Every structure is written in C-alpha cells, then in structure tokens.
Image (cartoon, rainbow, N blue to C red; front, side):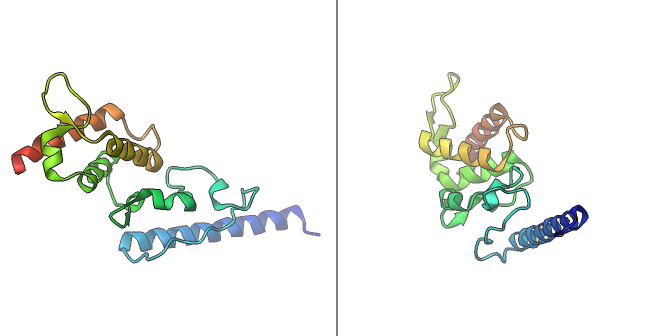
Length: 158
C-alpha cells in the first residue's frame, strides 16, 4: 500500500509529464510541424478518463470537436494570433471573399446601405472565437467594430 506522500509524488510526476507533453505539442504547432492531433491522455484530475474532463481553460479542445473547426483543411483553433480580434479578422478572410467583405458589414447598420455578411458564417466565426477565447478575453462590440472597419477598408483595396 502506498503512503500519501508516495501517491502525491506520483501524481505530481504525472502532471509534470503531461505539462511537458503539452508544451512539446504546442512548440510543434508553433513550428508548423504538427501533422496529426495529439492522442488524449488521462488527467490526474479526471474522473472518467477522458482528456477533456481536466481543468477547463480556453485552449482545451475536445478531440471530437476538431472537425467542426476546419476551414479549407486548416484547424482554425490553432491559427497564431496576437489578439482575439486579429484572430477573428483572420477568420473573416478565410470565410469571405474580398468582394463579399467590400459590399457588406457584419451586422445591419442604420448608418449604411450595405448588406450583411452571411449570418451562418458570422455565427460560425463567433462560435469559433468563443471556443478559443473566454468571454473575458474579448468584447463582441469591439470585434464588430473592427470587423466592420475591415469590410470598409477592403473596398479601398479592391
């Protein structure tokens, strides 16, 4: 029978090993060498043995959800971005053509006669942003403002 200290030491070793694996995987993603998703590992805090039952955080991505976040063969949850807003603008570029952006806004505005972007795609962008970032990390009104400005600017570039 193991003593409490032995059990604590083993648990700490498991956690350290898991963190090392996660950091290694993260480095691979940053280097662009990640070819396949990492296999789920059992967390020391998990009751069911599923990796997604561990401590919740904005980077925890359920394995079965990965296909929902594929755009043009790229898992967009792994795109590098300095801010949530830049991430959202990258998604706009991936889901909409320059012509769509230049003739529309994210949501209907009383100040503009422009149309609106496809609500299904806009909803998808918001869902993806909510999956990647906590609500405290980004503000919807600020994102809408930045996205609408991007739409206005894309008209100047075309």
